Each structure stands twice: as structure tokens, then as C-alpha cells.
Image (cartoon, rainbow, N blue to C red; front, side, top):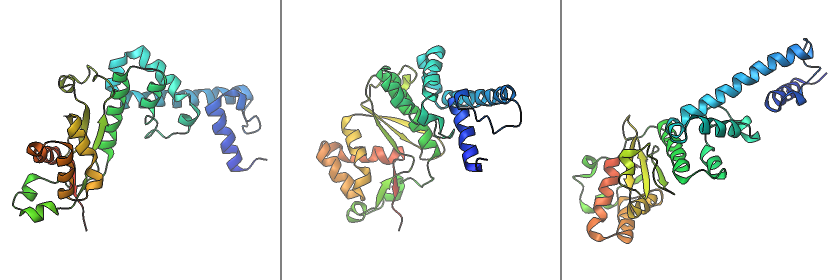
Length: 242
């Protein structure tokens, strides 16, 4: 008689890979009755996976259209490594899958944006740096101010025109997007090349002075501080504790 672990593995293989992996000695009922029950269970799981994708990518669903989106979704969930994913992470690789299927860059970017939105939403809480926190600092104190990326910060360099599903952002034709959650609401900010390059330097900067130095190296001196103010106002920074 197979062990519990072996029985579970054979049961899961049947659900994931179909009747060819049916564990004939595992059920008391006849093969036909057991397969009928397993088929119903597998269909329920498959439907739940498709629903999870649709809920993760509502704008992409509209961009691609119902039939195309669901055809791609069905192919996506049949991949071996997706069959073992939990529902919270099942949608994580969808953008890469779309790229592998030669979908247009606007669709791939939209998938990346929607997944980044979810990551930002699920990220840890942290108090964002506000301009009021540093307004009264002397120069030396300001330059030494310890900072880190806010946990909700996400940066995405775009590979094509923004989808019409994001008209308020597409009009500015950004090079990249900054996604932040300074309070309860998740916000999007279009970035040009310089702004994106500065934002990418946040993790390694560690202090306001270092980030300002990066801004000076990447852009004009007259606008360097403006870029930092934009990042602060967006809620992209938090103070390093300890």
C-alpha cells in the first residue's frame, strides 16, 4: 500500500496531468466514478485559475479582448510550473509568457504594470518621507538624512507605447512609470529617462546627499533638487530606521 505522501503525489499528478496518471488503487469507487469526481474537481481548479488571472489583469483583459485573453490564459495555466503555483502567485509570470507568445509590447507592459500594482498593494507598510520632515534641516543634516526605497515603490521601464487602457498616462508618452503607495491609494507617475535613472539609484544611495549626487551626475544642476522633490512627493522614499 502506498504511503500517504506517495498517495498525495499520485492524486495531485492525476489532477494536474489527467486520466493517464489515474491512481487506480487509491479510490474505493469504480474508475469511472472516481474519474468523474476528479474531473469535476480539476475543472473547478482550472476555472479558479482563469478567474485569478482575469482578476489580476482587468485592464489587460480589456486591451486584448475576451477571446484572446482567455485563449492565452488557458495556455498559460497548462504549463507545468504554473500547475503547482498557489493562487496568490499564479499570475506573476504572465507578462513573460505574453512576451514569449509575441504579444505586442503595449500588452506586455500593461501586464507588467498591473502585476506591479498588485505587488505595491501587497507590500509592507512604511512611513514615507514628507517634505515637512526635512524642511527645517540645515544643509549637513539634510545631506546625511538616511533613506531607502519605500516598500511599495515599483519602477518599470516601458518597452512600447502605453496601452489606451491608461489614457491619463499614455498622453505624456513616458519612458518609465513609478508606482507608489504613500498612503492607502496606489499612484502612478510618468517618468522621463533622467527621472527614471535617478529613481533607480534610490536603493544604493542610502542618504539624501548620495541621491542628490546621483541626480547631479545624471541631469542638470538646476533641476537636480526638483527631481528629488518629485520622488519625495510621490512617496517613493522612507527613512532608514536604526
